[in-house]
Image (cartoon, rainbow, N blue to C red):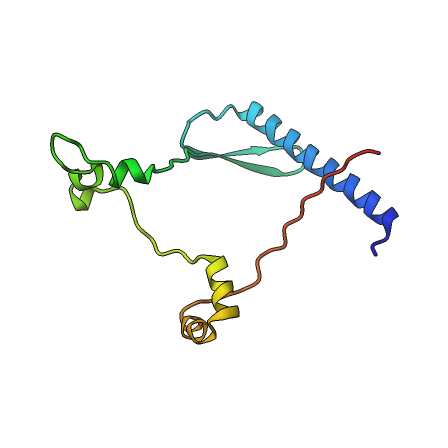
Length: 137
């Protein structure tokens, strides 16, 4: 059982630090006014005590509707959007991706297959995630 007083202190400190981080980030964005929608810029300024470099990065996240891209045929050409684009110009890369739940299931239920896969899978512990939710009582 954790020290409840320490938990109280740490949860408040963590939430306050996250709030300060969010506020400082907003103030830096307001200060530098970097509005290019996709790209980054590093600003370097000299204060009375140090040279401070701030890098602001803006990104555009794109998501593919795979059904529209490769599953729906144009009635005029009988080709999907994917098929209608020359192979060397297609902006989509199909990358093999592990399915963690399937790997776990194989380890528990199909050890022979899991042993074969172990030769080509590298595992390492992920960084622990911390999320604090505080509800006043």
